[in-house]
Length: 328
Image (cartoon, rainbow, N blue to C red; front, side, top):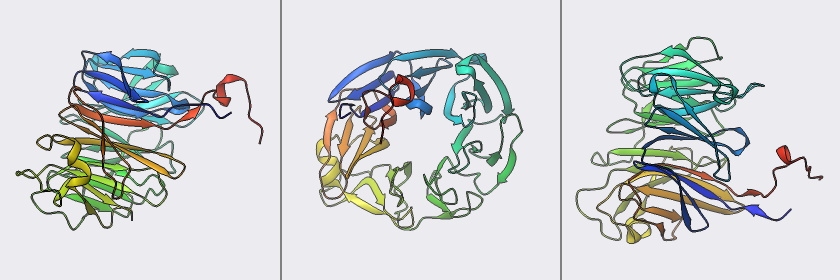
């Protein structure tokens, strides 16, 4: 079984949802801003739309279902809940937490924290729990479906976004308006990550799926165009966010318009090859292999990109659903 579905990148823009695969871009949903992109079990993708809908898609790009949310709630993040029921949590821009089951047939409001958008964050090793983040208010622990969350940390009141190490729930990275933060106690307390100049305002964070904890930090660009040896807006850490080093501008900015801003990142790994994909507000999609290699322009002339989600290559037939089982 050597044939595979090629790796792809889902691209959430301010004007629709696109899918990049094997050098080609395919429109999936048009004339609507994408507010979130999330993985679901079975290779499915969930895309939150500014119209108050959740778009459910297959790995191959097929639209499986379009779910209208109560009172046109706009999702900021979606997280699957482990268990026998096909269920997930949806955090929304109006501070509501929704619980959806049966593929969208049942949706209930589980909690409301009015005042600011809510985000639901995965907890590694605890597939039926999550952290809820509301910028300006802090973090709550959500331990089971149907139960109200518990206050987790006031220390995160200034945090705009956060994510845990993919294999270690004790290690978290977060960003505020002016600094990157790190936690080693599961997000209860945070300390500032040293090494970033004050003018480098945080933009985004992305953990790779590698065990040693490779992480990318994106910053807003400097006011002046960079020289080739200047730092680019991309910073990397290979030790779980303890130390970051800048990637030189010549590796990232040579193939893009450096007047624009890098807005988001995603990555996939294939054997010993790691591919990092960056999106910009100028509609550029860049591929970078890390290290001293130079980035390449995968495509451009897209609408401004706000969300990216890479999906690794997969067997052409899925043994879990095809009725065909691969023997060792």
